Image (cartoon, rainbow, N blue to C red; front, top):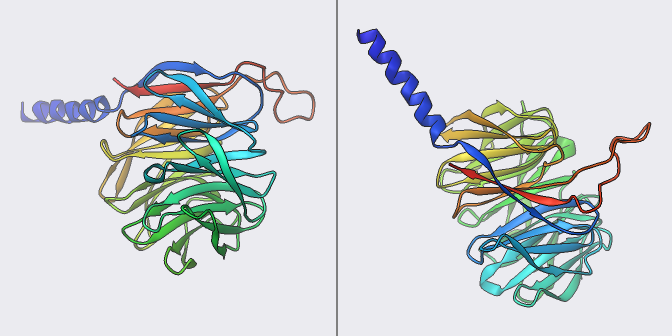
Length: 333
């Protein structure tokens, strides 16, 4: 009888662990126009979702789940970082090698700042009120004063930068070097790389998410792994299998769930518990839905997706079907 009771309790604990996730599809938000996409950014307090699309940033009101504006004249846009207390944002314009400083109230560009070659990833570091652009072809980071819109530093990275995260309390910014399978830590006061850490067994990391309270970084790796790294020591603590073609990661501090979105049409959801990381759900999405962000206030995740024509011989992917671009919204039950 005791063994049966223990078995029942064990099964119930598994069910409870899975019940607190149970992410499911909620809706799709259509976005007009053609062209590709990259980063998605949530401003939870303002209830806005910013979506890079072709040569513009689309602004979605999350209270209405509807498009309410655009930031235009951003050639080769990769994404936007927002500084809510300053009502400013910075858009990385890859084709211009510039960062566009934006008024978040009017969605108008105030100025453009020269960066390294092909600015891709970006973030706002609130501790020093600075924007960072991570320059793909330049192998560097450009640091811009968010108030004056002036470049204050250029940091050589010795690798191809991808997603990034900031730890204002520690005075650090983290970035993945995809081609080196390394994680770098940048001192925000010195504007210099102060640590380089290997991410094995992970390789070629793109996505990054951060649990600031528990000092955990979550990296989405090209060899179908999500690794969890101690941000104070650079030690890889755990890894879990994920799908193919990962691009983005997210972390929800309210539920301690880490997410990895993959182009094969899956999102892996894993639970963080101390030094352990355990997969609790593999969420089916759509093929090409590789880029993601999260609203920690509602626990919803948002993924960009579109339909593609059958590829011609020798092509990796067919043309994007006009009018098929959309944002997929998923949330817990």
